Image (cartoon, rainbow, N blue to C red; front, side, top):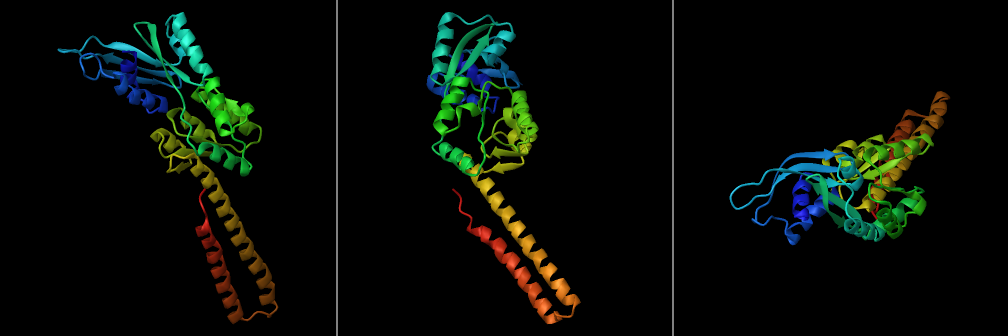
Length: 299
């Protein structure tokens, strides 16, 4: 029942953890005893803390009275007036977090009824992407709302230094972290895919959204990577730098041509025919130099 009601509420959320809970529900009896999906109304997203909705479990004849179900952080549930969970749930949560998993707590009727544990599935290319950022001279930082143990496990598996992990943060805390780095003189690029990342994406000097993420994150970002692969973000930075180098090279030769040619023309040492040929050559050079970008190879 805990998983069924949690999944019913989480269907209204775009968060990756919500999608995991919804995906797990059918295999664990994601419908009620009557065999029908619960009815849900009044869905609310509480920024960075959890979600709530009224759930009516369908029986054979009619729906039961709606019950407000809250799914999210334990601290948030306690703030809502729920008493602390019993020792069995607390021990289970501590064991899960020690293994690097994230706990999602479920409450209704003014009490914590259970918890669901989820863990990150790290993509095979994530470590490659972090190494790629490092080669570009960028310092990767893991900024996440997950608990510290889960964040450290992900950081260790992907090659992010332990001192570059900031965990248990709310959306406003992510913005504050980006702002603090900018205050130190850093140019910050933020990569995110969720609703909770949108404000930080907008605050960063460069916001990069994953195309598989939420619409809000995509709207708030400066750049959207079509593939849901962090390596694509590395390629985007590499391509941007290559494009900037090409632009600077074209500008240099264009100015150098004019600086050299104008004095020669002023002293009558440059005929119109030669000047026209030189101008045409300059244009051909700029176009040819720009076409070198077609040889760019993605990682």
